[in-house]
Length: 437
Image 1: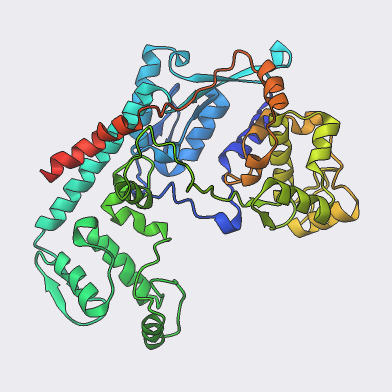
Image 2: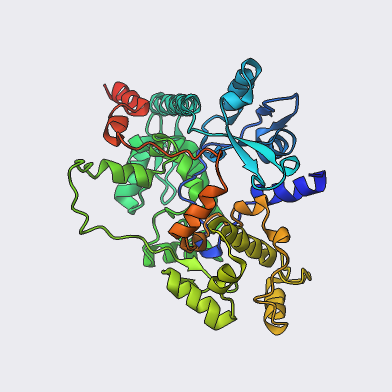
């Protein structure tokens, strides 16, 4: 595999895409400021600033064929990298990483091994939890410093009342009581000065704190926030996540998830009553337009009737296995995203132009040779929230066929057999208990 093919492979892995109406990723809030620390390669002398972490991740994949799982959930990436660099000096990478073999059914000379480092490995999971615990301790220490700080000095954002000394909590309570503006209880806030600076900056730029629209003068902004009851912050703005302690409590969880867990009891193992369970709709998006459907039959019917695209027919004619369907969908998504006809590879100036070409030239059901799209890079979704992939047929025949072609490839399952015990023995929960006492 040449370097150009590697670059093509990498661009499909490291370029995150989301459908516009689902752009928010509440599972991965930005909880800390970017640092100028260096990230070191796990195998050689290469390094990159934390702000350019994708450069080093790309280097790891191209040069060393290693992928780190869920990078965005690692609390301290530089320290994480240093730890594993030391471990790889002691033992070979195969002692720790799952091996993914590409082109496993093809000739041996065309097969390649990639390595996945993730928290399925107990040592990796423990490391991530320790880094998360360390960050939580730092946040709690920062909060305590703010409580003890006597140099606080600030005017209320809505009136001229002044607050000095150790009175930042008084200011928050004053704004909630006198101006009906609350950003939360003082005990839940950290980096309070920076939080207030952020809000003040928005007001100084005549921006509503809730809908974030900009107005021509302060009077108009004030009337808008009062009449529309917009004296509150936008909870969907991930910029604010770093100012709430609850966002630092559990690895990879936002405050909504932590709070919902605290508010419900874990059911007993012998409770088999699922009568009130309701599944969330998949909201799969059409390959060719913005239409969404909540069932497999609806989205397939829409694509067939509105665009003449019959995935079932292609599956039957080409005898596509499940993962081949996945690669086909991701291939078509990527070509349309790049304004390129997937049938003839002609490039256009816009997505609208390529879609018009596909319909006009009757290229909807025209596919290139399988060697073009049946490639390992199309295992990776073009859109990370593509629910259409969840609707693909996965029949028993497909599973048996796929199983016959995947012997020797490990399948790792998450062990959730003792969820109650895990929750009770969590190191973070214990840390919080110790802090509270």
